[in-house]
Length: 152
Image 1 (cartoon, rainbow, N blue to C red):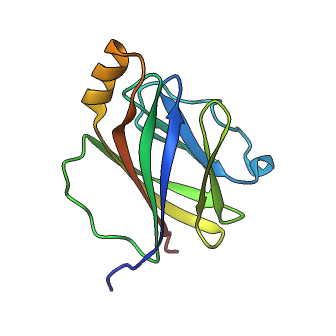
Image 2 (cartoon, rainbow, N blue to C red; image 1 turned 60 degrees about the horizontal axis):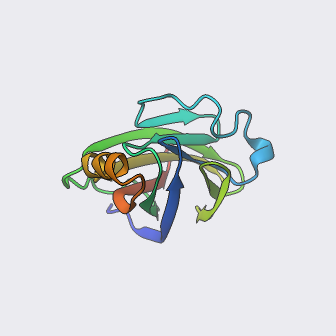
């Protein structure tokens, strides 16, 4: 069966100190909220009801496409500089974006439960160059984050 795209969110995410995260929208349910335990240099790191992404640029705004599927999407073999997968639990079915605080972005999964997440990124080498030379960048680093219900 081919997975069907249920919804898609386009987000501009503020990255500070090379990191940002996605976590359960009800942050009272997150035992260790972002940015605690952010691991330096680890592209995708899972935590309880949260996952973190490590950017190649220090301070900038990344373009993020978050897609929710009804099953595992086909593997997009595009020219990604990084990609990884983690498990993620949502209680409310809504996922908030965090950097120096809670951002405006919200990913609506449609239901709580266990999810699989695949994160991919491109523009890393360029955002590192731009943020070193100019100090900030907008939309240079691009992420695609896929969520699908975890079987079992």
